Image (tube, rainbow over all chains, first blue to last red; front, top):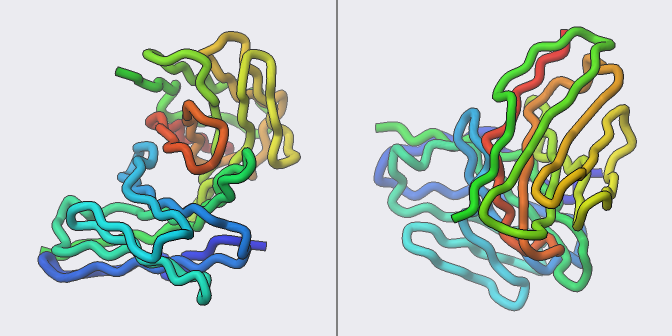
Length: 113
Length: 114
């Protein structure tokens, strides 16, 4: 049973426009969510996170939105740049324990020039 | 600064052969260490994690095993590889024990079992 789902395997966006990557989760006990970015043949790197006590967290061009009632989060990248082309993983966890990260399958973002 | 090394970068092995992948971390002490596998078209699957020397927690039953002989060394092994073991293996470290701690990943090993 996939507790974290990224239903879009890939997304193509024009350079300069907004990229929106979506993630859904099923476990209502998750209270911390993270986005990681991965280039080919490299390990993922941390991008941005959000706690369930917030509904928005912003860091430069990257904003993560959390809708707890819908069990949905999204990552917005504005404006999109060619270097943003990568695979983006959504991950979730519970902070009250040593519960580990549960990862989505990833969305490949392609920024077109 | 902290760095994490994995080797080899790529590996092609026949079915039934043994496996040993090594991961080492520099610049930190007593890290928590993780082994993940990313199969084609799938997310990261946590295989093992370790909070200290000789302490291994297994998340998924399989024909793989892990060992932590030294504080900053984590080894993934198999006695006999299966075709389904093909994938991209990633080692990661954190300072904290929870999933909310930022995980720092190594460059990964691409394993192809033929």
